[in-house]
Image (cartoon, rainbow, N blue to C red; front, side):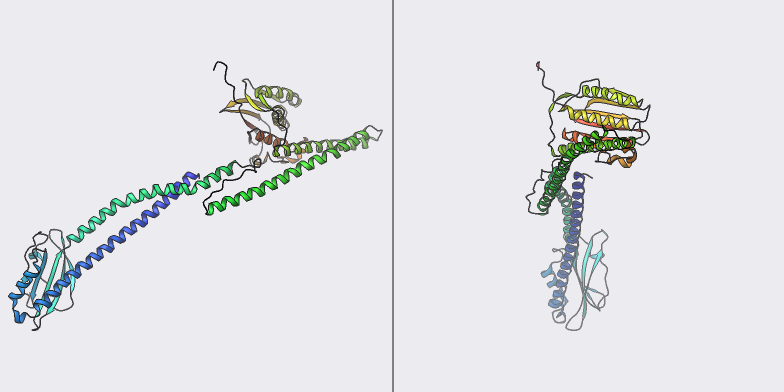
Length: 474
């Protein structure tokens, strides 16, 4: 998964969480406001009903019913205020009932008559025939003369519903805007927050064993990203020191072994010149072979150490890689013919690279020598060179035994042998392909292997093409 997809998924997760929280918040506000408006509306209707009872009906035995009716009309004006007021006697007859309101929001005549003179006050919602809903507060009341009444005060829920509908529309319109703004803003904030990590990742991908002296950029953010970059740089510094110690040890050990091996070979050659029994001469010859093999290993280790440390002497020049491949493969043809192996070279067009001719020739020799060793008699080897996408490409392909799939990732490791017993009999040191990889890396190139067991192997070398000088005509 790449960094862009991670940022996208994190942004989606953040947007989804924010959308869920905003939806929950909006629903909470909607429900809370509805309950508050309902309670406030009920309280307002209940206060009016109690005022009618306590102010006018309490002394109805003294003041008379006409006085009560006139006071209700004068003080509350139900028709003008779009309210419903009805006062009923204990026998079920209506003492007062308001007329239709001016806004025609309900029809008072269609409201059912209740018989609830006993019990506590309550509020109810009444669905009208036109689809509107009314909220009615019913209050049983007993006057001073013990006469019982039923006071009903109500109003249409239209204002409440219009307020809730407006809030719903606002939430419906603003929620997507908030989510979109959150997605865009969250993406850029996340991108800015992760940009130091992206820079560290790109720098870390460029660092190999050959450039451990480089360091990751320090994220001056004062948070975990800065601590991470500092810790990683300290780790790279420790790795650099360890690699340098190993490289220095390999170079020093290889250099120190050259002198005793040279002396040992000279002494064995001197012994071989003397008159000795046949078995002694065979022992000396075997020892000389082992000394020669050790000398090759030491020389290869020394070369690898210098290449890894960047201390190898490199004489860079513009080289025709096709010509180098053709001449080198012609020189290696004798080894192939000894095993009756067909060696075909495809290097027709000129391919320019900039590098060390001796080192690049060593790459070709090692690859061809490796192919000849592991290709059976009457086999075939093909080497080709061409340009592809601004890079010079060398391919060495054979139809030999091939390499097991589990060994492909290790063939360029030092002293690694796929078949250890057979490699030793063939005189291999296990360093040839490691040298090839180090030389390619020193030239800014790379090498890779593909193989199928029983069907052969193919090694592909890619090197940067040399920059062509401009023509005089241009």
